Image (cartoon, rainbow, N blue to C red; front, side):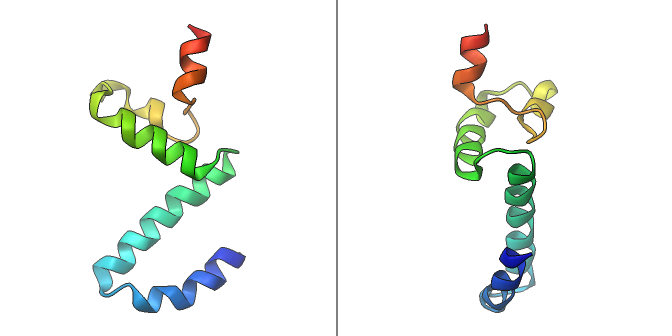
Length: 77
């Protein structure tokens, strides 16, 4: 709950309703990643570098509850 309380004042400076929606979306992703025991910075870095070449029919592999870091995935193969 603390991140929400701290963020509340920061949201005043989102710039617009659209900016507020973007902040809400990214915070939702970050908190979901944390909930599943992953480091948000590692998760976002990995997903953003892989998503362009990732098959469209396997995008669910990149969701926080299915995600495995690229290195761990290669070691398992």
